[in-house]
Image (cartoon, rainbow, N blue to C red; front, side, top):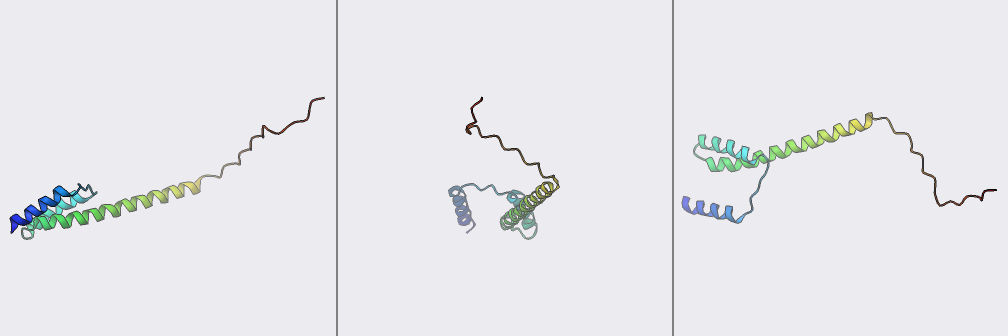
Length: 99
């Protein structure tokens, strides 16, 4: 039974494109160790750790993006408004002939 499952998983790995999700590797390592210690379920722990690690990394990225947006908005509020720029004279306006 283990051989059949192993072959199926290996086949799926070969068919699917590689996914490089942030946080997945670190979560899989931690989950694999915890799963191994908690009853020899390293593969299940690695899968769960990958999912959790990806979600945590996604949340951290969203928080960093929001913090950067807040910092940029605050920096924009502290800048004094610029003076209006003079408009260039129109070059196509005919002038009166010289006397």
